[in-house]
Length: 345
Image (cartoon, rainbow, N blue to C red; front, side, top):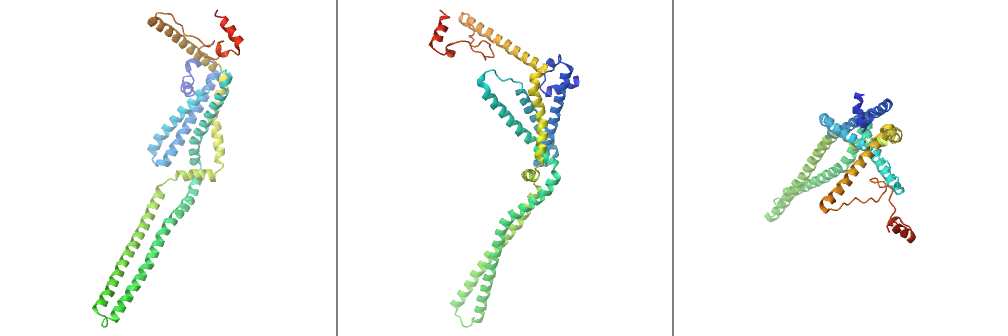
């Protein structure tokens, strides 16, 4: 079963404890480890594809996908570990335990959605690309319509003004030519000044038209380039949610697969011999460390104070502290307090 050792470690199994367990338990836990490995591979593919949509770089996407998959594995294993921890026998921990399970459930749902949805984009990518063409075209019409309409109106307005100014200029020139011999020098100067002012206004309107036309062409070119270079990740998710409701069935199926090792873990903690031995080993380790602490506590006070002082126990089952000793804080009335005091007299 050496080949199964990495699979056990993936499922947070201690091989030294599992060594003395039955072959059936070893095989069962190895299969759960294999499923955990498959889920990790799925997370790597999903994360890599999402990164590719964002970067369009195969090498960088592969590296980021592996990192995301590795982090997902660590979080997934951390959640598996939390289901090893039994609830306290205290009645006042029921609300805390329920709240803990609720938070872990929300975390699991978020993890699953983050991992599953990019793979659904990959699965439906052909159909999504077709829908995306329609969405992008509509967005182009909407965005272009607002800004380009403003520029077109500006060009049209100043174009009409230019034509009117040109017509007025021609009228002034014709008027001057037809009365050149009858006007005084002062009158001729005023008409020529008016013609020069019209030329200035015509030049200004032509500059505005030229700027608006150049801006329009530049905007169209930049928008077209940006539209072609973007992968439209947000739009892809919107299309997935709105146009492919069957994707939620895939989410439920894959979510059930992701949950399977955790659900098995919750049940196996109560049934498998391995988890009973693991719990006993953890309990003995805690008790052993607690005794070391008490000895160190007593030794420290003896060395510095000269008095032999022992660590006071407030519970009958230290260091787990679930059963408090009888004391003033637990007495219900004055008579019980007197009875408690009489024990020390």
